[in-house]
Amino acid sequence: MPERDTASGMSNDIEIWLLFAPFWILGLGALIGAVWHLVHYRISHGRAQAAGHAHLADSSRHHLRRGVIAVGAFVALVLIGLGVAAAMGVLFSR
Image 1 (cartoon, rainbow, N blue to C red):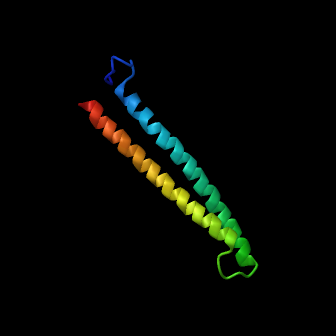
Image 2: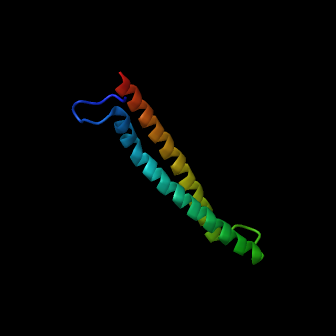
Image 3: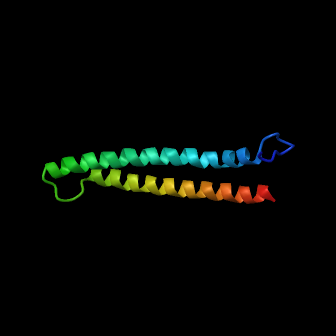
């Protein structure tokens, strides 16, 4: 059975997950934004290619850039959240 903190009445495992949750939720938002932008990049780029453009159109470049930034934000938030959860797990286990 998980240890309980007598002051809050909550188990340490739950407290660790609650500390991780904000990063997880923000990471999901970044992932949804990344998917949205990358889908729109593909649509915009496909239309530009069909119109005979050899280079990235401004709209394609915008969506590609934002999609890559959102993927990076997702990865960073997940890593930060895992780091916080691991650090708190170590601190609570002492």
